[in-house]
Image (cartoon, rainbow, N blue to C red; front, side, top):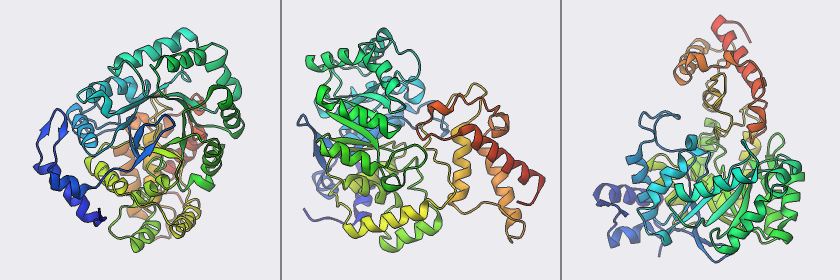
Length: 446
């Protein structure tokens, strides 16, 4: 099948949405629409599954009021899942702690409307936050089966390993939990067993070394063109993670292909360079193409809460074209330029919330980063548009984050720091942003 123009493809998807009948099984396309859409890129797992290169991340969901923490809009979520399913997306990644603990139950409701052999469920042993006992872990696992309305889990992960070898041993080895999960794999109730990684290289190497003993079916890593060679803080370059896993023939799923949205909402000077090369392609599609261009990548997760994002990602991975060597070199130059911008490395994973003092940590970082990316930071009274930018920053801050949840209410307790997979010193950043805001309010020079 010949590859069609991206705009034509997206237009075809939009027409399909408008004209197709929505049923319990999803949106039914005509034969012509199916041909125009192309086929979703599939990758083969270590157990022979044909997995869609585009995976559906279920950490974030559409809300009734459009806010990040609002009630989930179930009608919208059903439509998104049905549409994804109809267009070849068959990998759905959730966890007991996602969406305030509601994600598994919601996904169980959404997915169970479809034949069980048409999709793969990935969920996690999220015992990093709370009780590490065997009994608590077993209850979490059994509850996942119940919430997801299934008798087996296709891809089960030890969630967020990497903080330390000691922590890994306490969470999974010393309590007998990994042995239990291995037995569940042997019984077929877990079909693939792996882990997701945030942390330091020493712990990563240790967990990888256990492959000979336990045989990891897959692993999940943070992988994008910024983290490939320029991981920040205590994080590990994804080039190292990828190559170490690939050398052992361990397939990988990808989280944060957009680095929490930072690679979709790039600074305007960077955006212009992308548009000069491919005017019809979205900025995000470059990051998704990069992530999928590595052959041992099984599925690239995207938290799609809007239909246009889902359609754009389907367009990227239907009739998929990997990055050329020249494009990879271009993305490396872009990465080097991106690290010069003073962004906070927040990916809005929400692991740091709720804060016991009510601080909206992700919301504060999101507003700050948005102003940096859009080159709308009021830095000096010498700038001709300083007053306009100053007002826009302060008004936007008040609109984005309620007054009682802003940075000035942070007491610096540090409880949030161990929860941050990006290793951000959150109280330090809160103090810095609060000082910046106070200077703006007072109209002081920087």
